[in-house]
Amino acid sequence: MKIVNNYKDLGELGIDAKKIIYSKIKNKIYQKNILELLPNGKSVWIDSYGSYNNDPNVISFENAKWKGIFKSADIKYYKDFYSPTLHQSINKYIKPSSIVIYGSCEFRYINKQELMDNINFLIKSYHTKLLIYIDTVFIDFNKLKYSPQHIIEETKKHTDSRCKIHSLNDFKYIFEIN
Image (cartoon, rainbow, N blue to C red; front, side, top):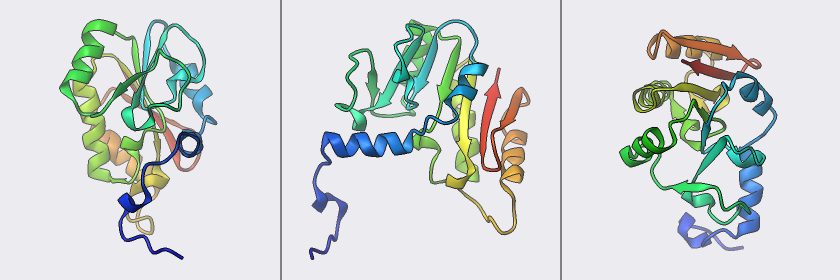
């Protein structure tokens, strides 16, 4: 049995392994809830499995680490979620009616403050409707002291007053920000 001292020792994952990981991370169970909230017009899905169908009004941006697992040539790739170039280009050239963040790795394994910072960043970067799927299982907070609902309400209080919360179950929520 080989002991792995560093993740780099594992080498690069193959395409099949990446497809399996991606399909587990981007669970499509609650995607219909997002679709029901989408306004008419172009929709940009960032790190959110936007290539789920061939809808011409959906423009998909995926993290460059997933390059090679999609058959569609229409998917655009980015390296930095917080890049000014990314959000400026989307605003200037695509002019979407909505931005969707669904199952994004940018909203996993973060604390409450990082969650608020990420949402505030999106509000400042994109001046359009935002639909952000949050799974509180992946948010780091004292789960003995606070409920997921408390964290969501606190986040709403410190982000934007135009924010509407849609509860999907005890741990999963959609932030709708107009």
